[in-house]
Length: 137
Length: 137
DNA sequence: CTGTATCCTTAGGGATACTG
DNA sequence: CAGTATCCCTAAGGATACAG
Image 1: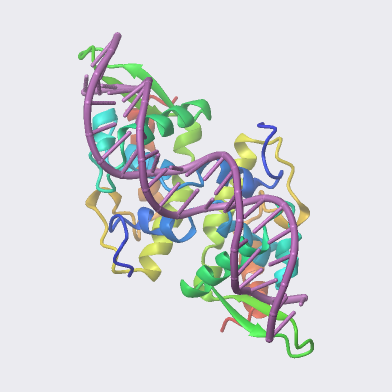
Image 2: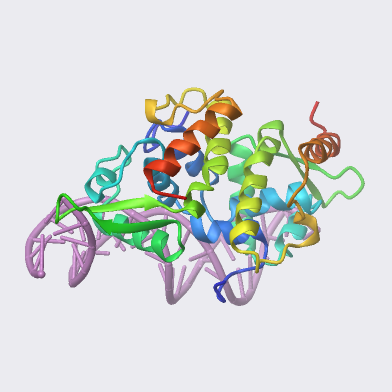
């Protein structure tokens, strides 16, 4: 636990880890857009800049939400993967998406984030796919 | 829909509404701490300052998550209530709390935010209580 | 009690150039 | 390709005083 946190409330703690305007977008790209490489995150619609992206990836690693390894086939590429801790943000991200689509239906959803009205069974399947893709045992 | 938003992704849209380090703490206080008055929010553990609190309350009102009315019994008091839109953040807040308590168990939880392992039935009861308290039909 | 207003400091973040 | 390093600017936010 960090010792500079504002309080011991779990909501407050979560906000200190993921409560900014970029972190969950990277998680979203890992979960639903199949992105794994630095450059792919850079290309997302919101236009994150390289220094900010590098900072968020480092923080995500420090907090144990993702891991990084070299791409075995391309020496100059890095591959980012969700950890179980990161993958376990799935219910939160889904709840967030459903809330927005209920109250801000004007927000068209990229196909990759097409989560609305997924059944629990379908979400379990998605989670299983992600576990395999990211090597979570 | 705002026209200065970064993208049409529902995750991104949600982050623009609740993705900062204070807004969800106010929502938390409304949901689980029974707080309704300006001064009560000020007294929360995280120590929000009055100008920031006023700003967040206004933004929450602009976004339709809360309403404000005068306290009928105390003229100088204002009462803040969740709207249905605000109350519908409950699943998201619960997911956030459960995630933190799974991975950061050192975060002791204030009694008011004691949500872990609540059954769906118990959560439905909490939601029903909040609906009555905040006058959501 | 519920905010505003002011001042001031810091953190966040965009643009860009550059390096291994 | 995957980042770093600068530069610079703005938004966020803490402290405090004060007003209705």
